[in-house]
Length: 240
Figure: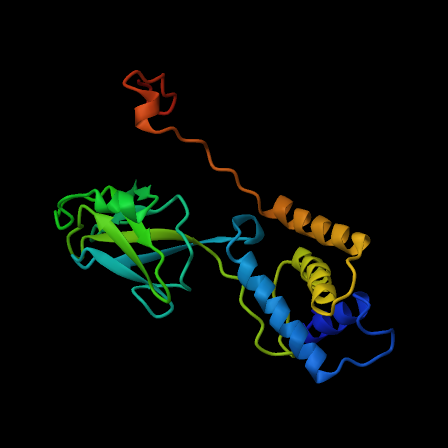
């Protein structure tokens, strides 16, 4: 398994910044480390570059909102958005037959502000995520009662920034080539070198391999206002 130092040193040589057999200076390695972490930070915001979605849950408290972030109520690195697939789970004591109820995600704060009585407490059906920094906030509406439910959010798994040159690159194997080729493109820009068309194509191809491995297309859903009152036959429920 390659280390971060292996990745950075090879990228400096393959990009043409260093000649074959040359030893990278500490300053060059540090510059490459900063730029690869810039890249990883951007990749974390692209669903097709993240290889997994993570389900994170919290027991309801009876409050209107729940914090999201490392060490917060939803203990996960703060996401830029929630993925479709959030739900409410009814916690029943003495049974394993717990039922999940999908929650509708509101896309904007403006939509959430149209709710007039935000403190109304009953069975929740809507969730809104305020992607504040450094801690996000989830609002469930109507407000669920304390200790009776679990709220589950679906977020992108975060690719961790590199912190040490001796750190092993613990990612699916297809990521190593993508990291190397795309870092080479960025390093040539940083060192004021002309773009290399072959290198750029290799970087694109490596990203497309990841896209093919990670793609998951959910079943299309239509808003009720578009579908209208007349619904087609449902083969799962044997009804309309």
